[in-house]
Amino acid sequence: MVDCSGGRRVAKLQSTKLLQSVRRGDVSRLETILSRGVTQLVNLLHPIYANSPLIVAAVEGNAAVVDLLLSRGADPDLNDTEGRTAVMHAASYGHVDCVTKLIEAGASVIHEDHDARGNVSCYLSSAVAAEQSYFSSPIDFSFSLKKNSRSGKTNSNNFRFRFSF
Figure 1 (cartoon, rainbow, N blue to C red):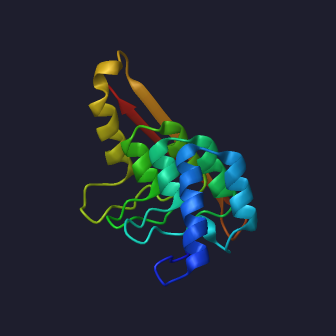
Figure 2: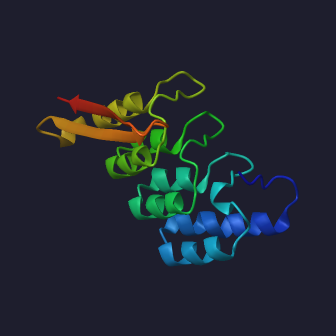
């Protein structure tokens, strides 16, 4: 994590450019900034809101930017000042494609925010409930996580959510 509050002028300037590019979805500019930027710039936290570039991309619902940031080493479990992670933000806005990418990258689905409002499934169900007038049939959302243990055995966890209105 890069902390930009300690007078690091270069990091602050690069982080501003990075966050602007994330908000705009400018993948080519992001590539340039990340290849020339401060080490671990991808995991910076905004000095006031503690939003990481990955959280901003998740809020925007830009799966291509989420994918790029993850490929450059973004930590999917960094959280903002309220304890919300990128996957929680993506879920709260109903950005299922971003949720899927983040979970596949290892984001925690059981992490709870500081307000104890819930974990990813609570955020996703709230977002879907808020948009229920747009859905005429049930929505199924499922994913599988497969990880290799130290013994070489593959462990698989399956998650499934169904929202009906």
